[in-house]
Each structure stands twice: as C-alpha cells, then as structure tokens.
Length: 147
Image 1 (cartoon, rainbow, N blue to C red):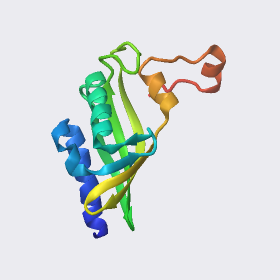
Image 2: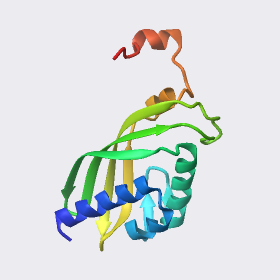
Image 3: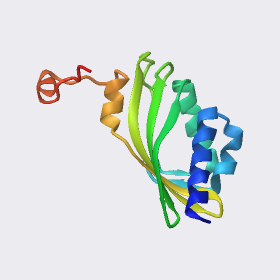
C-alpha cells in the first residue's frame, strides 16, 4: 500500500474512535493486532479497552495535529480531550476536563493496523484529572502554568 493509503487507514481509525462505534473496530485492526504499550492482543481486547475509556470519559475526542508515514509505519501526533466522569481503573470520577498531547505509532499490513505503540505523559495525565498532586517540593520544582 502507498504511504497516503496508510495515512488514510490511520485517519479512518481515529474517526472510528471519535464516533465511539465499537462495531467498526474490526475494520481498523487485524485479528492478530498487538498494542505493545498496553500489552493487548486482538481486536476484542481493544474493544474492551475503548469501551472502558468511553465509559470513563464519554466526551473522549482525538484531534490529529500531524501525521507522517514511512514504509509500513504511520506516526500521528494527537491532542486528546476528555472529561473524567466515571470510574477509571478504580479512580473515582473527578469531573476534571483535560487536554493531553500524545504520539501514536502504527504498523499497517494489508489495509489494517497490525501493531501499535503510543507515547504520552501518564504522570501529567493523572495530575490533570486530579488523581495526584505535587508535594510542596514538587510545586517548587514544577510551578503550575498560569496561562
């Protein structure tokens, strides 16, 4: 497949996630899909994970900022926005809205995503939803943004 076709596959997968239509997951990932970041295998585990995300963050939305393709891989820089309104891995809802940058990398084969990795600042994410707070020393070292 061409680089442009691979980018379109990733763009469509982001659209499917934004629509929150789990019935379309098989269109985006291969049956033997592997998410290396979360150690998930197969489309069923991805559907379960997305279902939990959509329940915990019903307004979860991805915005593509940049997309780059080379060989069979596609890199996409995203902005995630959501509000924590339900239990998330045992964390009671905080009602906090957050915006978080993320980079996802996909490997494409035969028109579907077969492997995925993502990179984001998990510590910052948990801070933004109110799950953790800096100590006094942490606030001195990492002052809050005032913008």
